[in-house]
Length: 151
Image (cartoon, rainbow, N blue to C red; front, side, top):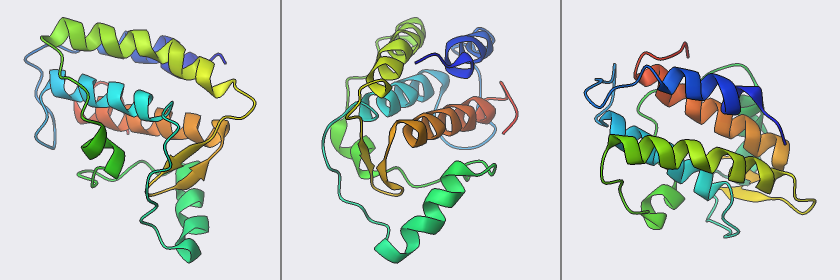
């Protein structure tokens, strides 16, 4: 799958990110944010069925939000996978940046699988299109957190 936002716009925005960049909200530093975005891409490729914490009758509205134009809320609670997966932190900013950017093509390739599915604790079972929208929104959300693009 080709996605100009993830493959072109995101790397351009991250070129302006510095190890000392400060967030407009939240507690993460720039290295933590890049590690967090990397984890999101890994979770998008993870075959596990994470517990869905959204009640079944709320899933249509939550999925409509995901697919709609509104951005993710600031200071949103991290889904279970982010807490349980716990990937190793990067040694430094450059390593975090490179690891995140190098994972984007792997994530996009996973979306091309005919049997692709992702289970997200808040949004439920996602197909490739929905997972791509989530990755875009999540990435935009954190780049906006550091003033690198609009929410």
